Image (cartoon, rainbow, N blue to C red; front, top):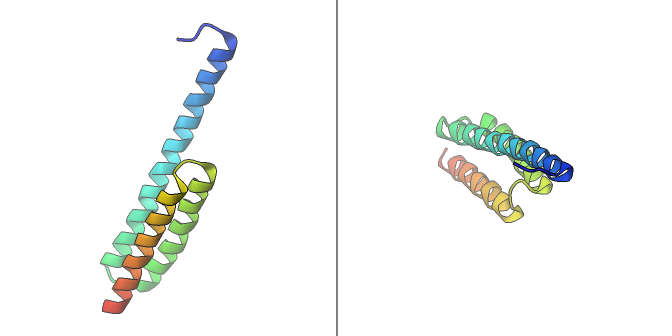
Length: 90
């Protein structure tokens, strides 16, 4: 454990940030799962709404630096591609 006052503060800050980042990453997983479930159930309207929410959540996470911006773009692209493929099949 840290001995200096500044090191103790940095440790507390890093724990706080790690907890926040973990929550954001969990939220991303949840919204991605909701999009995939809606696509699997062939519910186009729900899938479109879920995709809009997922896009917003993922973009916000990349803006805050929780995930890399290219990873965010890749996730959004793959979700949109899956939704468009489902719309073609329907």
